[in-house]
Image (cartoon, rainbow, N blue to C red):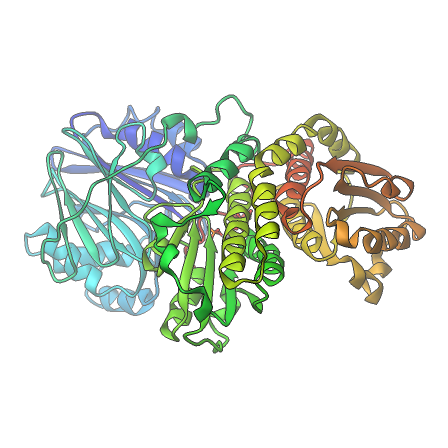
Length: 608
Ligand code: F6R
């Protein structure tokens, strides 16, 4: 929910920290700050508001001098987004400064203890206890003081610490919050995510929970929580700096929408070879699908909606019962799970706190876990029995687009692979469906080509009081995701309903000119949905239908029609979401919203 960064080297740290924070801003953007260390003195600058404000205040970093420093961009949890609550936080004597992503659950107890010892608190944050604890445990060994302080913390944290008395060293600690080390030449970094450091190095070390890194410009040493040195592997990041830039688009969201044909292709290519589906990199090839009697899919937000669409595909192709559960509900539901349950976990970031907790709970009860994740080296990827990466590349816009469609792609491939292994699919159907999946990047591209038409339609709908999204089966799953996209970036009240359910109450809300977006791509249920369109039309609704080419019947009932190419009904979600992503984008643009950073949200939800 927050972003942290640290630098040590021969250059001025402040401009590097600010550039890195701009890349991390999607993780939280209500306040920001940096601390730079020079000649045994720590200087701090922090502000409420965006990184741009911090850049102004520091003259793009030129006002703070020193070649070592830490930075933070915040999504407030404890205490309002004020200058004082912004990180870094300093010890009372100014010798230590700390940045923190995560939540310290026992901070109230620690606060009382520290206050009783005479520590003075400036902020309302949970983080401030950390810096005072470090000060309390300091006996002249910086690393040991941080380690001792960390051992007192309950909750989640990615910490970055500097010490005025030890001016060549950064300390970074990880517990349930993402943190990696960037390995440079004569300079080193830490950051919440690789986008912040990829302009400088593509060599990274992923810290594990409970590990602490002591970082100087020439050296990196990683310790476990007992203080024992641990060898770490250096990983090479393959994507380019441009992947994390806007590349001429007005917003990351639009860029990421447009990248979807390539992203979906990247998700499928390594798995589709000569008519076969293979999972070499995740070790799934040897997985015994016959041991599975039930599938539980868990995730949050859009990833949950991808799972909702996936349920139809698994049930159809594998004839296995599938339950889709919100991770925040599953974790506290005393779930019925056994060794024959396959748990599929979906997460773009791989760091969503509720998803991690639900996963741990189910794994504890014996489930085999299969994670579908975008961010390499993330927590979910690490703890799963099997991990399949979506290879969507960095997703910066807060609202997910290519993260979602690549999750769907992987789910389609898994269901097809499993159905064939289980014998619930004959060879002919398998090959027909295999080819349908292979065609999806082209189908998505054709859907994207409706861009100008959708932009025009946004002008018609942008000032609606509310929007209703309706559909059946896979179309209903798309309706849920379409409504979420609309509400989160345009703030327009949007609701999704199973089309057949409207008449059980919600239809009372339909009156003259109420816009209804009708999803009608699943050809098996088109006629049924058309009946529901007729029902809302009869109450005065204005209907925008999304359907597949060839559906002429819709023309006589809908006011506007967007045609996507013909696609296999169970795989239609991945294509029909495209016009809805674009519609949400252009409605938000019409309404002057901050599209890449919608209010109250953050990209990676690492708190419960
Ligand atoms: C919506 C959105 C969120 C995420 C959800 C889960 O556009 O992005 O609803 O889908 O927070 O995030 P991940 O997939 O990172 O676990």
